[in-house]
Amino acid sequence: MLATRIIPCLDVNAGRVVKGVNFVGLRDAGDPVAIAARYNEQGADELTFLDITASSDGRDLILPIIEAVATQVFIPLTVGGGVRKVEDVRRLLNAGADKVSINTSAVQNPQLVVDATRHYGSQCIVIAIDVKRVAGSTPTRWEVYTHGGRNATGIDALEWGRRMQQAGAGEILLTSMDRDGTRQGFDIELTRAFSDALEIPVIASGGVGTLDHLVDGVLRGHADAVLAASIFHYGEHTVQDAKRLMVERGIEVRQ
Amino acid sequence: MSDIAVIDYGMGNLRSVSKAIEYVAPHARVVVTSDPAEVASAGRVVFPGQGAMPDCMRELDARGLRGAVLDAAYSKPFLGICIGLQMLFDRSEEGDVAGLGVLPGHVRRFRAADMTGSDGARLKVPHMGWNRVRQAAGHELWNDIVDGSRFYFVHSYFVETAQADLNAGSSDYPRPFTCAIAQDNIFAVQFHPEKSDKMGLQLLANFIRWRPRAIMARPLRTAVAGG
Image (cartoon, rainbow over all chains, first blue to last red):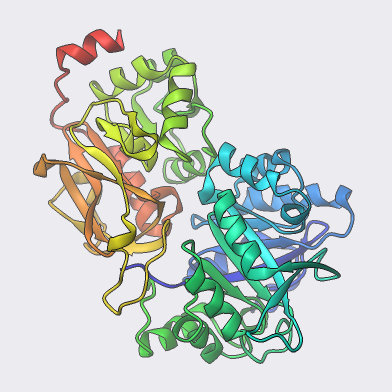
């Protein structure tokens, strides 16, 4: 049967990988290919690159990184950050990305999702959704935020997920802003609500601080894939460690 | 003249395919092409595909590539990938569109009613991720690939064929489905070898070296249709 995917996430700023730098022998951000290759050797099932460059002119600088990684690493590569037009999708795919993730622009212009999936297929369009719990809501609701979590939209997150599925999205990258950076674990209720409601795969993100959190995301949150950054970056744990624990807990992984 | 032509009919991203082939065959001449003459002169042909099959068929014809693809399928080592596998068959449920009809069978969607795993959990469509592939029989393209290895899949449709000896490999989601087919000079896979890490690269390397023992006979009707 299908294996649960583990996806390390690398942040890229103005052409430099700014996280994922603490591997032994890798001094600094300079070598994205080496970082990607290391995760690949550890058994990462996919890699996600998130372009956090503030200005749009710096964004093209991610293209040579993706090009270089794509000549050496042969697992799916997802790239997100600042994707506004079908043309942006095309450039990233041509550089060697297999999937492109769209966040803010999907909210501003849902037609972009329809156009991009029609052009390139659902398989390569990931919709990234950043959400926060709506305080005091029963049953719990979550609101969509854009612009890296700065702007509230008033949109109900689950409704948005359904709409993006309808528009042709291939999968959802779901980040809990309440949990992101806390290392307290995924928002399990959120993950489960999405995964159970949607037909397309859901990638859980935000809050992983231990390997057990990854297991919880799958067993309790029903996530199809789990994404994490810092637990892998700082050398605390490898992807292999994560897979070993998952196997112990009865989760199928690629080994 | 190239060693390997990757057929480009404007559907999606072929860079991954050509990069992976260049990686396993650094000295081979690899072209990504929409020129029928280049397809005709290549030693081997890779026929990839992404997106929706009706669009793929339409774009193939819009570029005048149907004849070149059929000629290649009946003449030289031919590797179909994903929709490139599906298009070889008679017909697809996706948009109810006719395929190239090189192989007998239909392309069907995973049925919502079937999508329950052994633990009772609902299975998602598309089938996206790493799944095990059972090799149906020995084949040169499985050389040095452990039976049951995982490959990367992303698809919502799969082929069903009544001709059992076409089946070269299968996977479970949750029911068994054919994910690799082989006939003479044709090998085609539903998964993406170019994204399947070491095992996928091994399959591509095997394809580069493959010397098929037979070439598929061309039926009269496609000979006429293909020009």
